[in-house]
Image (cartoon, rainbow, N blue to C red; front, side, top):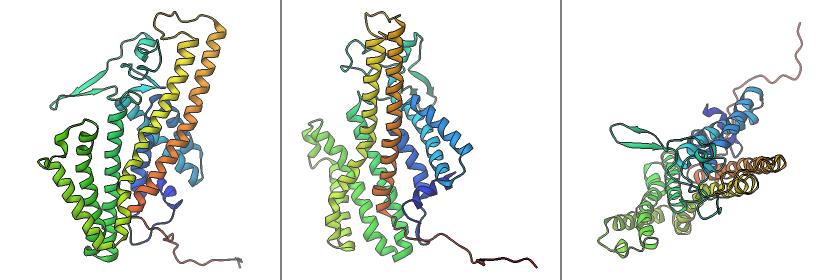
Length: 356
């Protein structure tokens, strides 16, 4: 129910009558980004439970909105935890890339090895396109470059959606010409930056000298779109467009925190798991028998529980705050003005009513 996300929009400002209500964008992207930052099946389950309980028991609009966010955020966290990262409570189901070179003696610990069961990495293959659906394609601590690169594309897509909505709003308010000069221009700049992004990565990260060659079509298209878009923006907005130009890069870079926050939680989870399960309980340690000392097991369980409870609380705060920040600060700046008023139909306002 996207209407429940209206609370988060009105928390900032009520939409005007002549602009698109951004509730649908918040309903789509807020829980999705939340789930991407959490990205763990173990934390997704309590989010789902808390969200469902809140929707069942809470009556106020505020708590029902938060409960809805937690529920759908939990769904996305489970989705990314299963299919992107393939982990639960900071431990991968099958491939042990999470502890590589980080936890000596615990590098091979997975849920498959800890439980002593066979968990297939490939769940099934989609017929026709021959695509394997796996339990994880990347790891938060072992696939940092590709995840950060992917987050830049997520940011570009998110910002372009905002500019497209802004283009429509501008047509309603000021006509097609103004919309082209002030919004379509920035869409061209963003698309141009998207063309340049793989070129820049190829040149700087891979060290490919041919990436910056004028024979590179992608480079020429990117420069052309970026330059034409900026010229249009300057013509439409004046000097303000030149001041806003550096924001193109800074806005996109803001989305790397989608991965950075997930990495920080993964690092904390690895530390608590390694200390509690590996070092104290001896579970999953290569060449070490698990302890049978009851006191040590209680200590290990206490550290494991307290550690993951702390991570869970931090996940609500960090993923929740940054998820909504990306909507307010990055997306809404592209199209949303607000300052409207709720519809209040004409009615008699009585102070005293007397029955005769």
